Image 1: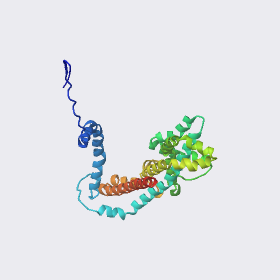
Image 2 (image 1 turned 30 degrees about the vertical axis):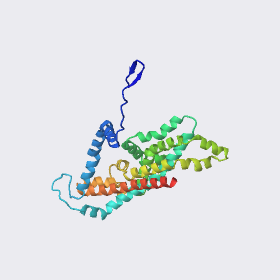
Image 3 (image 1 turned 90 degrees about the vertical axis):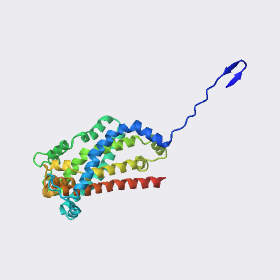
Image 4 (image 1 turned 120 degrees about the horizontal axis):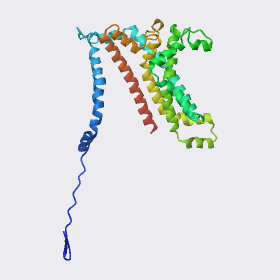
Length: 313
């Protein structure tokens, strides 16, 4: 209270503000935002975590598709899978498909993105043409290329004047699936590269031009280094997707395994064991092995990326 002459002025004391602790802030954050992610967490647990745990349990049993008479067999399913030649054949087919698709789709997507980025007229048309096949369902793309590769009525042999038995010879069957996959899925990687190209600062190219660098030197010393991270992402995503190839291989071979089982992939063999041979326990063990393989590839990618970032600091 202060007094000035005959007038008295009362000033209320200022309230002291205390900053909430970190624990309180975290609790308030979950209270305000936690309910927004709760539906996702519930669905994730229901459709991902629970099936995974259920699959791990079934892999240690001799469960059949009816679920009757299930008994615990320990590691017998895993031992059988390791010694099963069909497992290794299917894994080899998936690996061969991956080795063909990943390099081709990475290079092709980069070239298409460079073309769409630097072309001057009708850019939207080029981008639409390159990306549109990716919007098609897998069955539509597979049926389309099955018709194109048909020896009697297809256009591939007619246009190029060849008589290649694409879908009936084991030497060409997987190659036909690879060509279909390249046409169908290159649009996704193309879009990633195009977005990354548009993010490269233009002044880098202008400075290089002033220094006398031609188009080849600009691509080698500016474009490719700036796209290093997106290239790693494209390669990782394509490896994970290619190892899980199923749809186009099955549809193009009329829901079979191709000539002499040359297109039977790992996923297809797992489904055959589970839903054709009714050996759910054994199929679960195969799927767990495949899950570990996919997880190892993803973790290796993360480890390489982290080491690259630490080395660049």
